Length: 478
Image (cartoon, rainbow, N blue to C red; front, side):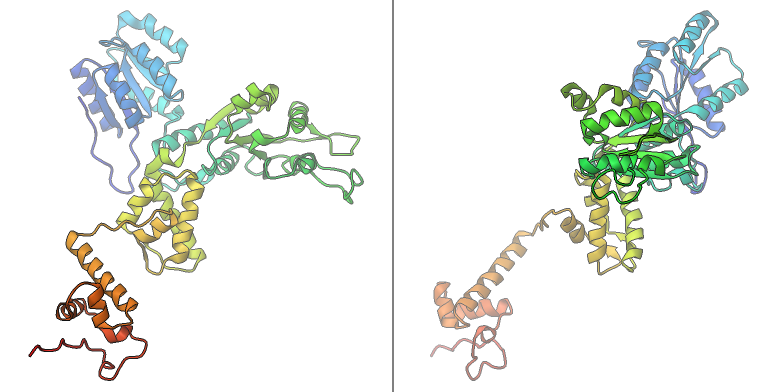
């Protein structure tokens, strides 16, 4: 059984998605009516198994479930939900006889429970409290996108979950490790966390640990004093000092040399840096965000990355999906990039042809969002019309254009190209071309006329009588 409210009109607030589970059809109908009337979008199912089947597709912001269910019960459903989506709140409905079970459930992490029969106001109040802390909660449609995440263009449920978790963790000062493939937007997420947190007024400083030579990385991070080494002609503030009061983003932390890992760990423990060549340490107050595309667990096992540093950096982990895992965002991102790049190239571009957009949406994207941006920039640079055609997109994707012809058209093109090749080979001499084609001159002239080909145009020096470019008629026998 499924229930839901009509789609909201454009500009209206986006409805929160609630998954309701109960094997009592009458109660299921009543819950759906009350929640729909309160402005929520409800999906109602009669079993925990059905709920789990809907979970990944629906991506609800709240699960409301009875404790006693056929098959898996409400507590088992809660455990399964938490294993997939730890930030998704669950409210359990319980009869008087199962109150001890409900109390145990709250100790295990269930958000709340309601005892049957319950008052409608109590139900809606519990739902509102749960939605207020749901990591799956998404901003209302039609409202201006929150400034903290304005650079991250997305409407996919999987990105909504990452952003909701990022919003929660931003409020504190815990170190965050952002995982994701190259080009997936790790620095953008780090900037969003910085803007959403209490250090937003402070500096955001980013450094790519794999882009700076090992010999210079220590000086870049911690600074140096004049005369510390050859070329150190002045004192230099390191990036830790530059980020004082704000956030330091250490990108590709997995590529940091082992010797620097030890010094970084000391800084994180003592909250002080000692510039190269200095005798005194300097106190620093920074929040550390780091990112990597490497498998740090494998690096730990091989001894390439220090375990103690790993746990200092990995207080909270956020994992960005690949672009292929958020395909519904591709049209949105492509249009967003096109608008920005059209202004850069001073062109009036309206969008992509439907088949061009389809090609973008179904491409592999091993380079993720960065590759999509580069592809859109290429088509923008080469575009000559307001609507981007499929051919330009295929060129940017390095996909060969495949044109499927009808048999008749393929035969016509072959015949035309074959005749052109013969005329070029024989310098426009029809007799020679007809002989090579194993056709008499009369038939060959008819083929030329059918294909609109003029022999004189293929001659280096046209003889008299051929200068008008007309196809000569074959001689009349007799």
